[in-house]
Length: 414
Image 1 (tube, rainbow, N blue to C red):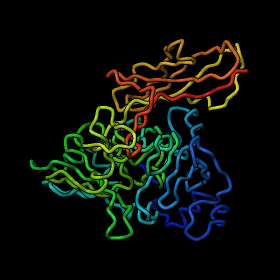
Image 2 (image 1 turned 90 degrees about the horizontal axis):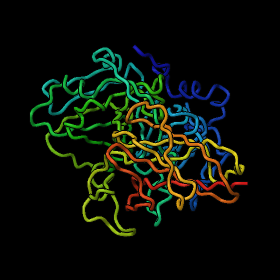
Image 3 (image 1 turned 135 degrees about the horizontal axis):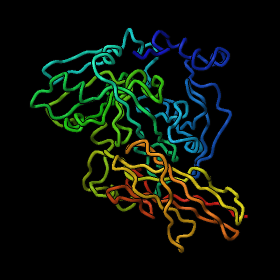
Image 4 (image 1 turned 30 degrees about the vertical axis):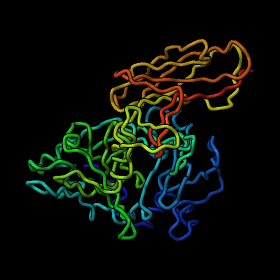
């Protein structure tokens, strides 16, 4: 059984362990980070953000502090296909989030499965680990609003750069196994997921997400307690979170402690009206307009990025340069990645690298020799096995979701 070093810690003990004694002593009461001295400028209007260090995290880009919304600096994605736990982005919705560490110890935590079930169940983390076979999946977790800051016209919501995403190896038990043990009744239609983060005011909606029963009983979703070989970080859902490979992060409920089977379609705030997209194959409408019909956001669309070069990098004329990046989609798998240094000359096929699974980042590389001096716009475009690809021009929707335009990086050849 996997034991966590945080099980017996109260909040003060958690902070001492996470920061080290010296750093923790500098914190004001209730503070979660040591200082705001460093900043980063994201490449859009009003893009300056502080770089701050939270428990178990390196310095990340902070968008809000209550609740914490932390973005991964983009250079991290050049470190490897698995995003380190201490660099993984953080997204909460409720002001009181995350729940205090003292609520999450092994002596207090229990997962309940209830509602339209023949055998309602309750498990401690240890009981859950012992009751079902464990499984692992490498999967991308991406915020629905990743890259929202680039939308034009601008839209409300967190003005994120491209770093509200990450890929990790998740370990837990299959959600389907846990649900089947609870014996869903014939009339059950959906499964609701709730975590220990709660709203401060009774009038504020709780963050509850729903999956159709057939999606919940699919083999992919898991209840995970481990991330990249370690216990989940506090800010990424310790001690248990829902992992829904191929789906946007809104479904990946953190600090999961309640699973409820229901007989009707759930209409809570975070399913309707929140987290909905235009009912259109490309989830878009004309800029500035309102969609006539919407549906809940679900699977990731196709994306790809250059990670080995950043905008403004200077490279030498005539020297071979290995350009590298990542591509991913909602689980069909990446079939091809194309690279262009000049759209007038067309696209070149990049080499695909290690395959960690159909839900993971897929590395691509290509050797490029710049033959002239001056400015180059390097572009990358991925296609999955269903033939779905990326648009050359950005698509727009009023929530700023699902951006997947062909990305470009400007480099100067000298």
